[in-house]
Length: 129
Image (cartoon, rainbow, N blue to C red; front, side):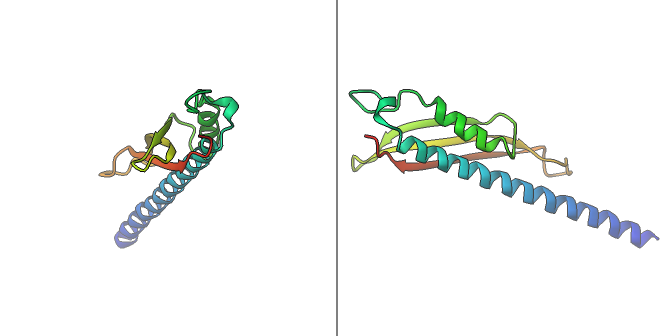
């Protein structure tokens, strides 16, 4: 009976760890894909939604909303989404979307913590400039 109790406890912790790792992997993957879709949307944003002289994005709220809507399917908490136009050393216009924040674990396993940090950034060539 004692051995069975020890094995059951170990198996329960193992299954909880597998579930937690799988969920974390899925959330990070979905956040990365949402950032990629947001960067693509920012890269092809029409000129009507850009500054007339610099062609920089003036209102990125639609892109931020799109990224948050994709993320809320797997995590409804608050994550920071930023859209940044930039240029690299070669003068090629780029746009980046960064998603950052913390995601809580399902189970508070001892020694693991209560949450994990997520920081994903995706850069696309800005085709609208």
